[in-house]
Amino acid sequence: MTIPTTFHACVADDAISKVSRLFNATLDDIFAELFQNARRAGATRISVSQIDYPDIGSVICLIDNGPGLSDPRDLFTLGQSAWDNDVQSLEDAAGMGFFSLAGRRVRIIAQKQDTAQSWMIDAEPDSFGGTVPITCSDGPANHDGTTILIAAKPNESYVAAANHAARYLPLEVMVDGVVVERRDFLATAEHIEEWNGIRIGIYERGPTGFRNNDTVNFHGVTLYGRFPSVGQAFHRSYYARLDVIQCTDLKLVLPARKEIVENAFMDELRTHIQTIFFRLIKASGAHSLSYQHHQDAAELWIDLPPAAMQLRVFEPSHADSNQNSYGKVETVTRDDVIFDSEGGAIEKQNLAYALSGQRAETKLYDPQPGFEGYDWYDQLARVAVKEYRVIGDTDTACVAPGKRHTITERPDQLEIHCTLADAAHCEGWVLSTDWFILGEDDWGLDDVDIVVTKSSKATSADLVDFLEHALFNPSDDSEAGSYDQQERWFRDEAEDLAINLLETSLEAKINAITRVIDRDLYWLRRSDQTITVEIGKGRIEVSGLEV
Image (tube, rainbow, N blue to C red; front, side, top):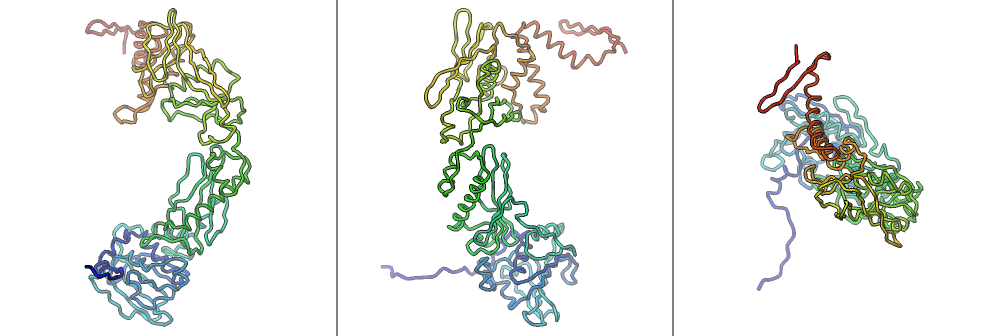
């Protein structure tokens, strides 16, 4: 039978040997931690330079005007924090920052607090892991503050690292004698308010989104924190950055202090940030928040009106998404229609061309799924392509979107049949057109069926442009050729197909030959020359070409 017992958590004897893994040992880490130590100790000024020191060599030299040290062992005791209670409470200082120097040769010359004497402390690269002793002796008399000499590594950019660490530090830093310009972390914010010891800055965000890895300034150390943002479809969107002043509840993950501890306070902070967003949006008037955000605002006791009755005018997408454009944002009426389909470029280009010649009184708009839930949006009619009809002399073929249909001759009529439904009823549209494409998106010219009526007045140039919009999607494979090459090859093939369809295969062949000569050979002749090219079986003869 096991007798119940108790024991306490402890630190393994060899834990100190692993301290080199607590930090990345970069100058960014080193300056961030040492600057913070100096600030907590009460320093008001830090200087950074690189010098040659007699018995060490090239060193990076940090000097602060703080009060020095009361006990050198505090620096090298993992987890030992000698800060006063106020600092401990506000910043959760853990006594690990000095170990950012692990793996470096270091000398510290520090004033003995409240005396005219100093210590000189020498640590080898392995001293931080406990395998090599640290030596401490008397330093020079009348040494003020603390000087830290760090053995430099080849090609280290200490100037850039020091300037970066000093940007938002609330004390003066000089690098090679030049005072680093201090900045307000929230300098460009559109709205700032203080809450629980934190300055919250609100920024506008563009429609394509914004991401800045530095969203929190913790007394000069910048890091990324995950905070809410609020996007609007057609109006201003917002995100937040934080500048910590004195906040006991916001904690950083130890030891590196590059992440924020997730706790109840963070949930409360995020909720408060959302409240600020919704307050600002309400004050600005009309909005285009999603219905879900509208409901979120209501749960925070912020009463917003429904989103403005605005949508983007329908613009057909292109097979090459880089060529897509946004339609104009307009105010809609209850009689307007949304094109609500999962179809791609082929379906949208087919529909847009058919609409271009009719139904001038009907405005078609792109869907805005986030608006689902608003009464005005849910009541708008939706149109979707149901089927294509190919009408010949004796029969009619009904073809579903994305399907092919073999065409033996040009038909008499073409129709696009659409469903049209709103909250109250369902009916249909029938759109006459003189061409469309049958097939799946991402198919090429050889895979789809191109259908043109007998009576169409289309030119081959018109049809080539249409085919490019609906089908041309260049490859990013370097072996596929440049964008311009791929586009030229596509248009050449599309031109041959269009002429073959609208005229005859003979005209298509003649055009192909003419295109090659015009593009690649015509420039060889002089303006007064006539060149004859004869192509026979196994031979090509050229006459009339003179030097």
